[in-house]
Length: 332
Image (cartoon, rainbow, N blue to C red; front, top):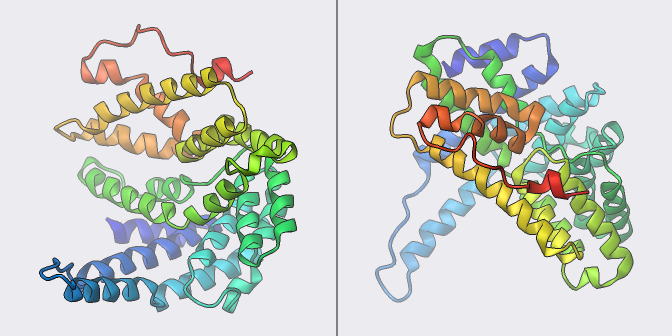
């Protein structure tokens, strides 16, 4: 099934689908190589733990090593993005090149930059967050501050978690017999896309740290960034970090409490669905429908759509339960 999906993606006239095929093929192959060759973790059997430390060091070295297949995929996608004005394709290339183990700017990755992604998608806070990360890595505090200012003015924060996922599901073979394999592949894609985001958030949380927002101008910028992340993001990670920044920046406790209640209710319904003892075809189709929604509706929007059906699916009361006021009713 994986091979069929990859072939369909690679034959697509859409460059975004072909880029997904390149990155996915290399990523899945690397995951399998690591799985089969990673040294086993050794328990600490003496006070020095030398054997355990050696095994951990060997595993870390494997993770840092340059993977030729991955680097070749990054190069190809970077060249595709450099010739395109599609911000989604460009985002994939910038993210891929950020994961490269080569020296920054080596090979075709020198053709793409966080700054050009932000120019192509200037209303996207996620792009400016990556610009801030690049600026922090080269020690340019003024560029970090400018990127944060642009993030505060953004119309949305689109991390693009569902970007590759939607391509994979739409190009997967049809039929109930491949549902489980398609779902497994989708989970692998999520794991791949979630890697490498931590650096972007680290720069933001340092900029909006509790001590930093004591400055009135910084507090105003960070509060505006939090508004974008909580109210107009496609991931719950964004929303959670945004809520924490908002609280540091002076948001009233009632607002944070309402946001938390809404998240908890959605997450509760999702957990009920996800932890069902039997994953039948109907359940797997609903899960894939949820994954497909991620790109257009974001994580919380997709969860809300799924949660709306939870009582009828699970046979538990709740459809007519009063909804918590949530962020949307209290944000203004």
